[in-house]
Length: 302
Image (cartoon, rainbow, N blue to C red; front, top):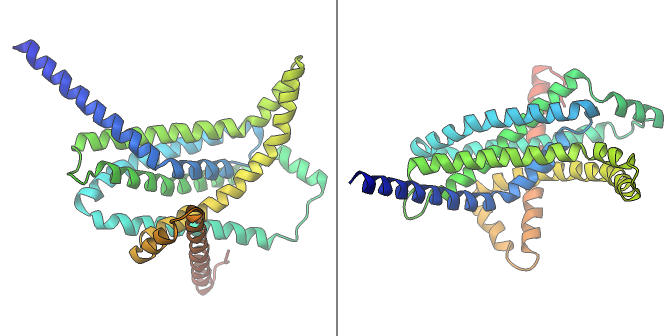
């Protein structure tokens, strides 16, 4: 009798684990797009840090990301259970903040467009990296951005575990959300750490005796700056694409219209461009509002 009960318990546990695995795989596939944007944004956020501070900065942001998810997972479960109507407004606010950050960055670059650095100044800046205060600001900014992207990942995962035939058991929901939170954080920041240390890998290989290793090292050293520049551009674009996508998703009529134009061979690209355009406009509107409030208060505008 006891043996039969144990087998039944093990069977139930196996079924639950199988359910969790299936739901986690489904959620991971649905959040893959956000993962790519998260990777580009975070690689961009830690750029400019001196070489020996790159991994400590990535680790600091990764720890902040884990804290974000420790807050978001129980908060999402609580909101989903007691106030599901709050999810969309909160996501829209986060989306607007992402758009605002993107426009603020572009505005800052435009303000300093006439400033040119000499080769010596650029080399010195590269050697020195950012100051301690700037490093802390980068970490805080990256953690804030991660919070919004993590919130979207958790919201998408909640949608997966909310089965139309009936929500999954609470334990399964917790397990799936926790698994996604851990996998995404480890995956993103593991890749970011690898990307920011590419130049060190290239330098190490270029000093090897092997001709093949030297060639590979030189190729990596040549490609690394272009990769970082590309990720910086992709990271800024992702702010508008993700932020604009969150905002439009929260407005049913707009979301349905974008879904409608998203059909066809180039539909996905068209929808992304529309989301990005709306994100740019929304971010500019928020920047104007913030600067207007600052002007009324007598504080310097961005």
